[in-house]
Image (cartoon, rainbow, N blue to C red):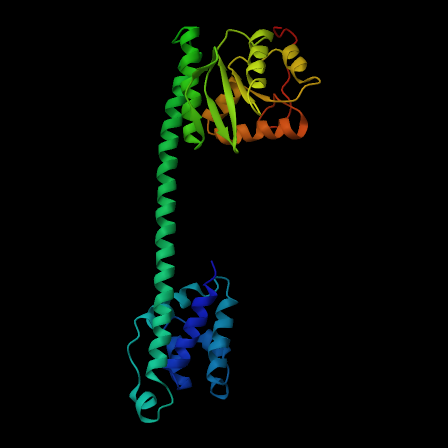
Amino acid sequence: MAFPNDVKLAMRDCLLKIFWSKNDIVNFFRNNSCSAHDIKILGQYKELHRNQIVDQMFSNLDSKADEGIAQYRSMMKSLVEWNHFDPYYFDKIKKLNRIDAETALNHLRQLQEIRDAKIKEQRRERERKESELQKSRTSILEVKDKFLGLLQGTENVQRRGYELEKILQELAVMSSLEMTEPFRVIGEQIDGAIKYDGEHYIIEAKWQEKAAANEPVYQFANKVEGKMYGRGIFVSVHGFSENVLKSLVKGKALRTIFVDGADLMITLEGLIDFKDLIDKKVKAAQTKGLIYIDVITGKEKKWPTTAST
């Protein structure tokens, strides 16, 4: 990571305002981890102007593989703590001005405070994200175990449907998606709604013993059609029949995307988060007209020849 240019310019200004002697400038570099080789690159530095000495050393440090980070940080620490103003140059021959020097040093200190505050904030944000990620990993393992338990038949089919709704809610929360709980409206049962990319998607969560067939899918399609700019997500743990999806797509506006148990398992395995899963499904529908895809490959899913209709 390159040292900030504004800080380097402030350091340059400080060096030229606290040192008049060229030897003092070079000794400052030497005392802050600049090697004999670095000093040698300056050549006959006494023949250079003071600003040329500083510029050449900074240019040399910038050209290093590590961009002179260690040396710059050492110099910055020295300058921020600087409190010596040589009376010979400041008071006797008055080549340097104490107010100018103190102003330059204070400016550098302010830049350091800003930089330190940013670093602390970045560290706190990184720690916060790591903490959230750890909590999310713990939570997703718990949700995964719950889903596997349902697959193993720990609950009856109706109860599994309710638990599936809860799993979807938990996945939405982990992906920072706004999701409403199940509700009824004008005689319709809605299993919830997710707000994604500014749009609200109503949800149908089905846990059946076979692929979702015509009737429940068409009923849900009608629910979606009856809403302003309606969009939907139909979740069927055991997938969907081929005929119903083909007839749903043919000659109609695409308003529903389809999620199956394999999609949920991929999410619960941590291969993709729930928000990205929805994003890939929506993108495929909007750009390719595909409403039932493998989220890993992006290709349309294939149905077994014995799929239920």
